[in-house]
Image (cartoon, rainbow, N blue to C red; front, side):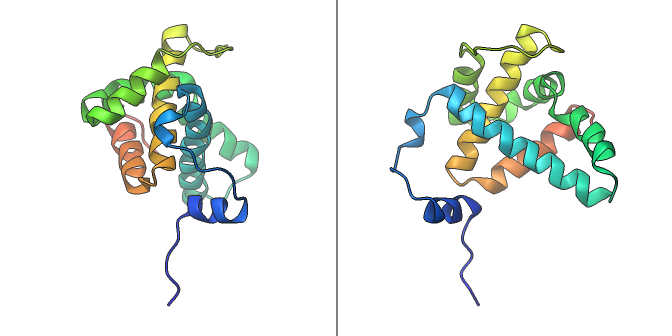
Length: 146
């Protein structure tokens, strides 16, 4: 049986780069990758629930990946975060992004950025189970049905 290797490690082996301590990444870099990680989790669940046209899938996924939805999830997860996750969240929330979401308040956008930073951090530190559990818990506690 082949040894299991994480998606991240496979990417790093296929496209080698310099090794960087994740704790030195800017909060916006963590949010950048975290946005993709969170989006991939949601899209995977949405596709797994129904084989539909891509436009329908997109409309369903947007309900969960918008800055407003992510801000709501961030609020209910704050008490669930470890101390380290809380620190990453604060760094992300307090970052100065160059853009803002057009359909969310500045406060919601910053909260969403903090949440994305946490998911970026978890992905880059190979804490996949933790990321998946936080997404599930956040959706449940925020009252989202997926």
